Length: 168
Image (cartoon, rainbow, N blue to C red; front, side, top):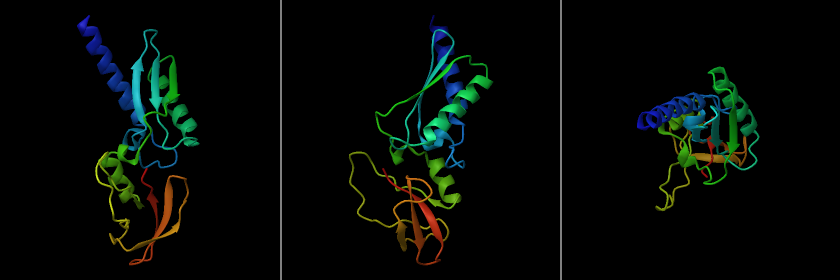
């Protein structure tokens, strides 16, 4: 019986890796695992799989595309029944973005959100580092950019506009 539990856990890990490798529909440079929205993958006794996703914000229109993409990837890998559930608690936070995800955002020209420790001090600095030249002398152009989770900023030093993934 113990071997079956270990095997099941290994399979869930493999399926989580597959589901987590799905690119975010709005930020295809990031996978769902790097974005931190994939919460859980669980094998059911009937051979189906339950996947829990937490959107970056309630009402995020990308959650439908994420769900469909996860269903397709897992079905293509032989899982007959995939159920993707939207889970709102605990809420997603920009702290859920992995270090690799933050690196990819910056490399893609999007200023990653500033990390903060839960229950720790709130950063006093409001500066956002330019992903193009590294300057912290930036200004807010618009609270919203191409998606609700990003703001549009401009670097005063190099004058380049850029998206900033807002902290939540």
